[in-house]
Image 1: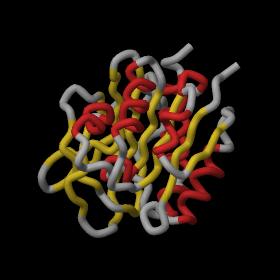
Image 2 (image 1 turned 45 degrees about the horizontal axis):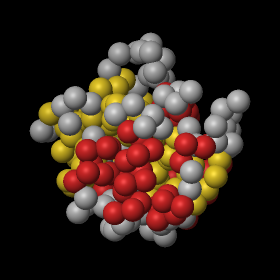
Image 3 (image 1 turned 90 degrees about the vertical axis):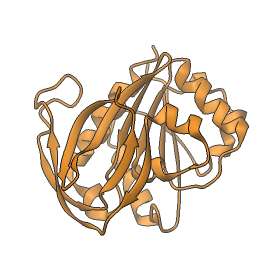
Image 4 (image 1 turned 90 degrees about the horizontal axis):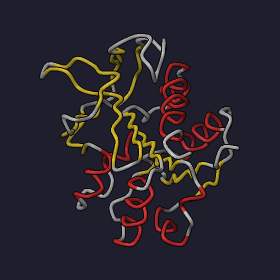
Length: 206
């Protein structure tokens, strides 16, 4: 039996309440059970080994040392982490958080349409999701060159990763940059990226 997944999501504007509700509805379509929390500060009080993965869909400025230590132990010890959109813009004063995640938000332009291009259709994680167009904030990141980039977009400055994975210790991490607008969260290709990213990170712990 699969271990449950912990979902930590919080926000009023970023992500919006509607986006949070929609994200939870999407996740509930996947074959997992979930424990939903509205603060990352509960992590030190939980037995994280009971969970196969943590999903972060939030935007918060501060994380305590205890909560960061707990997240680090979870992933480094073999747990999964699926981070969505503004998770990469959270906890900016914590370099270790970005070492776990594999990248740090630097800026974004106006909400606009852009093409999300699958690097290798039929790949071993995302399969034939294919390329798709979304209307969203395009996040620009400083990111670890050791990340495996599965989807990207093309900008005037070059290639920008949109979905990447990495390992951290014994654990697996997947980051999806889109997720600001309701139309993005309704996109069926986005749903497939969420599901297959969650599948991959969850399989890291037996």
